[in-house]
Image 1: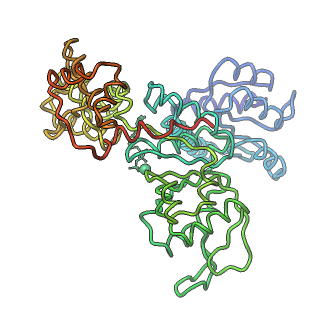
Image 2: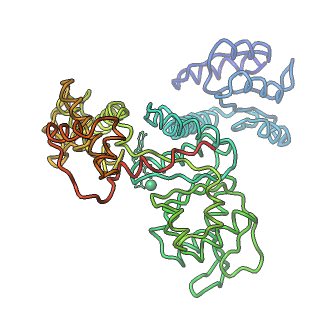
Image 3: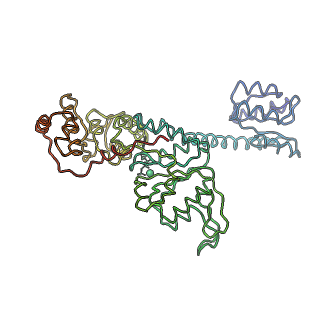
Length: 461
Ligand SMILES: Nc1ncnc2c1ncn2[C@@H]1O[C@H](COP(=O)(O)OP(=O)(O)OP(=O)(O)O)[C@@H](O)[C@H]1O
Ligand SMILES: [Mg+2]
C-alpha cells in the first residue's frame, strides 16, 4: 500500500515475478477494504499516507487480521515512527528509498518466520489439546466424578493430592489440571521424588547460591522459582525425605523458600500438585510422612479408580489406543475382534491403563491387522477369575452367585450368620455351596478388590 502510483506498480510487478501473489492499494481506505475481503500473509505499507496515520492503519489491519505480518516503510531518518510501529505490532521495517533486493530479502525472511510462528502456535494448541478431556478416556461414573472435580479445582490455585494405583493416570490428571487453569501458558514442571537423592532434590527444588558448596560456581535457580506462577507437580510424594517435607511445607505455607547457602528467603508462587500410589494416611500414622504436610496437600483429593473397577471404560480406551498407536506406527488397525475384546475385558489389569496401553501397542506392532486378534495379545494375559466372561445367562447368574456367596462366606465364615445375611435358609446355603462347587477357604486376607471396595468413596470436596 503506497500512494505513489509508479512505485506501487513497479513493485507489484517485481514481486509477482518473484512468485508472490500481490494486491495493491493507493490509500488506507482501499487497504482496509482489501484486508477485510482477502487474507494476506504479509502487508507492506508506507507509514506516510494521505488519508490516515500509518500507525493507526497498522493497528486496524492487525485487528481485522491478527495473523497477517506487517512490514512498514518509513522515511529515511525517521526512526521514531519505526519504533512506534514496532510497538504497535509491526514485524519489520524498511527505509525509503525502497531497494528492491532488500525488500525481497525481508519478505522472504518474514515468510519463513511467519511459517515457524504459525507452526509454533499450532504445536502449542496441540500440546494443550493433549490434556483436553476428550483425550482422557472414561465414561464410567467414577471417571465422570474425576472430570467434574478437575474442572472445579483447575481454575483455583488450590493444592491437589492425586491418589491412585500405578498406571491409573495420575500424571495425566495433574497435567489436565494445569492446562485447564488460568496459568496454562506458564510452565508445568514435574519432580519425581523417588528418583532423586535428598541433597540433589533439595538443590533442584530450591536452587543454590554461588559458593554454597564446592563446585557451585554460580547461582542456580530452583524449580520453585522456574515454575513462576505455573504448576509444580510432586510425583511419588510419599518418597520425599522428612527433612525436605518440612521445607516443602514452609514453601507452601509461607510462599517462600531458602536456596541452599542463601541468607535471604525468596518469594515463590507456584501451584503445588502431588501424587502417590501409597496410603499417605497410613504413612502419617507410622511417622513416615508429616501430618501437617499431609493436611496441606490433602485440601482437595482426587482418587483415580483402578481399571478393574471401571471395566466399562475398557472398550473406549482400547479404541483410543488402537487409533493412537496405529497412527504412530503407520499401521492400519481399526479395532479388536470379539475374542480379543473378551480377553481384554476380563484381564486383571494390575498395571491399570498403562498396562492396557502397552498391550495394545505391542499388538499393533506384532499383528497384521486390520483387527487385533487374541493371538496378538501377550500369552500371560489370563482372565481375572472374579470376572464373568460368558454370554450365557444361566452361567452368568451362577458365576455371580458363586462370587457373591464366596465373598459373604469370607467375610462371615459362620454359616448360620452367612445364611442370615444372604436371606436364605441354612439348608439352601449348603445346597448352593454343593451345586456351585464353592470351595470353602480358611478365613484370611481380603482380596484387593474387596479392600478397595471397603475403602471410602472418592472425595467430592
Ligand atoms: N483415562 C485415560 N485416557 C487415556 N490415556 C490414559 C488414561 N489414563 C492413563 N492413560 C495413559 O496411561 C499411561 C499412564 O498414565 P500416567 O503416567 O498418568 O499414570 P500414573 O498414575 O502417573 O502412573 P505411575 O504411578 O506409574 O506413575 C499414560 O500413557 C497415559 O497417557
Ligand atoms: Mg506417574
